[in-house]
Length: 68
Image (cartoon, rainbow, N blue to C red):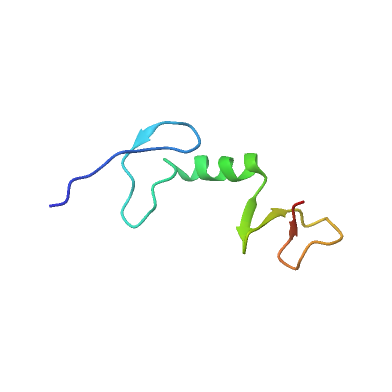
């Protein structure tokens, strides 16, 4: 039987045992959602940073606009 390991939540810093088939970044869905909200829903694609701003006039159809 494989040994379980503990991880540290990227948002609250709490130690936890990740569930199977997860990357184990967050201890709960609430921490995951709070992390995304606090960092402004930024994602990287082909070296470009995109910020979720659906109200921006140059936003793509998915609501993201390039950060510069």
